[in-house]
Image (cartoon, rainbow, N blue to C red; front, side, top):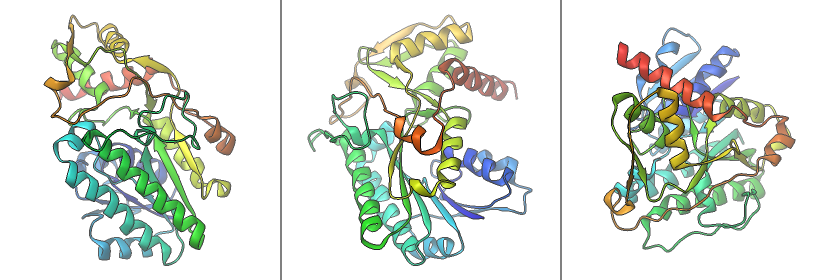
Amino acid sequence: MKVLITGGAGFIGSHLSERLIAEGHAVSVLDDLSTGRRENLAGLAGSNRFRLIEGSVLDAELVQGLVDDADVIFHLAAAVGVKLIMDEPSKSILTNINGTENVLKAALKDKKLTFIASTSEVYGKATKFPFAEDDDLTIGATRNLRWSYASAKQLDEFLTLAYVREVGLPAVVLRFFNTTGPRQTGRYGMVLPNFVQSALDGRPLLVHGTGEQTRCFGHVADVVEALVRLMQTPAARGEVFNVANDQEISIRGLAEEVIAATGSRSEIRLIPYSDVYPPGFEDMARRLPDVSKLERAIGFRPRRPLSEIIRDIIAEKRASMAA
């Protein structure tokens, strides 16, 4: 099978590329390398079933040609990370909406199987836990630009499901929750790689706010397993799925686990949100997914413990520091 992965030089995309190549598929990656890295795909450089096209999902003509040549599309390219969204909100909105529109329009021509990456951010300030796919979504005020990413991704979902209903496009929406693991960069505010690097360097672990806010972290290998199974499950088409681990931990608790796992003597330092982000930032206290729908559909749910995720990131960081 021929698979196109937009954003495939990124964190999740590179792991998915490796898995699909290992299973005998041909993979084309489209990435503008703004947040993705060639190094993430170094292990595939010698494969005759892999190619990297440096370009943007905003190039509709390029996207159409690549989609025409593929059997399946994973649209993972996006402007991601809270820091990036807050620093460049207009660019992030346009990249996320227009990029998805280009991919979906290209897929319509021959009704290609298409997976659209969304995010747990779409649940916004919802207070019903755990978050289920058909729950109402509660987004904050527009003056809080933190919610612009969630709103853009909601539009991506609406457009995808509109094409599913109107023309029968075989598409699946994927709501990712804090996927992490090797190759994830802390450059755009991703918390776990930042914590690990700080602990290894002996620097303070900077916890925003009170640190009592909770999140669930899923190993990228589990997420890739879920994506591959969804690709092989016709009944998943036209549906929305939380793709996540549901083991919950506070951010302060996460910092404590990282310090213990690294044997670091780093301190934990609480930092007000106003010292980190520009005006217009708002956080949510809790983000807990219901993953029962995913498990019913594919017979699998991410379960790798946080300790294993932390261990894998520490090993990668230490290897990089020793090189």
